[in-house]
Length: 193
Length: 193
DNA sequence: GTCTATACGGCGATAGAC
DNA sequence: GTCTATCGCCGTATAGAC
Image 1 (cartoon, chains in turn yellow, brown, cyan, red):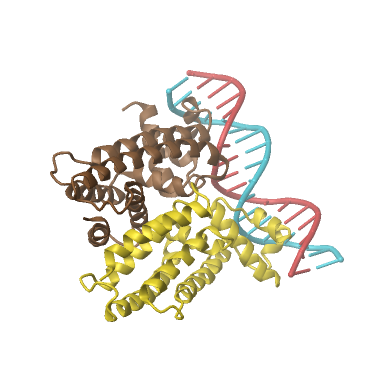
Image 2 (cartoon, each protein chain N blue to C red):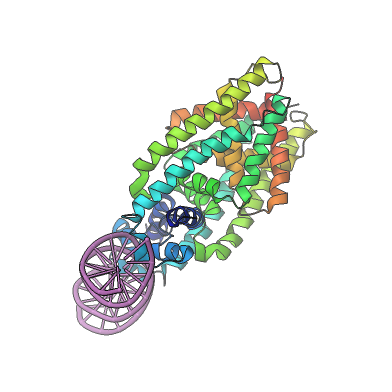
């Protein structure tokens, strides 16, 4: 793996775990296996490094949402359920990118707020659009109630996922998975035909 | 207001907005109207100040959950709906304490994780217990489905609130309130008789 | 209890040899 | 591109006068 690639990956994991202020260039350098001054051969500042990570992550996030909807599944219910559980799995798995995404959507570093926002706004909109499309499909084939707007349902879906991400600190994966299944049950009862 | 009281309040607001590492003793001092060295007459360290704020906030949180359920309302649906919307209102209002709570439940500062956890675990359990009681009540009087466990429903309820708290950065209060109402609609359809 | 002054370490960032 | 050395700044925390 190229040094710059590794730098992006390792710093992303540190930012996700300890936040922007909680992650020092020295710690990043140590994890990558360089001296901290060497990082500046790749990035002119901590800020530009962070923003580059952000750009990469937001692109990946949209990709993940799109990919999580498995078109081999027959019913909308199964497609949406599977997508939901894939997200839950990613929340606790080694995929720190979704933790990075959730953390900085909520708590952007003070001075980078505006620049972050432009990246995040775009990806939030795209992710929503992908899900709305799938839900409208479910409404067309008569699986999902037409009493509710597709956008409204999609919002609730993401809202639940974000809420679940808050529970990671308290529970292990099996417990979280059980919670997610029960929460899905409530959600599905709320939107089904 | 006593100096120590003011110190707790002002530092809480800064911690909630900028995080633990993002809040310096100098900024706290400035907001309180003291020199930073004077803070050490009240607390021996930034850590002890932060933990004292945490203790206060977790107690207030349990109190807020208990108080948000208005016993004058006749139906379980109305009581739960009103409680839900009070929380949403507090998310965006001047009440920084709920922002403090949500922030550090999810992202505790690295070195204080264990001590924070003991406070938060206790308050999470108590808040859940209060809501479970109200939901079981709704099940007894036949408003809420008995197909679902009260605990499961309570988890979904808090999960939605936490998810909504993530949306603050994107939307203003009226928009968030509309979202919350629509999300509630999905939720209620999911649990009603 | 609040102030001024200061200690000391870690931070982001730069200079310059190799 | 990576290193050693170093800068200037700001962080937490302490000492001591009032």
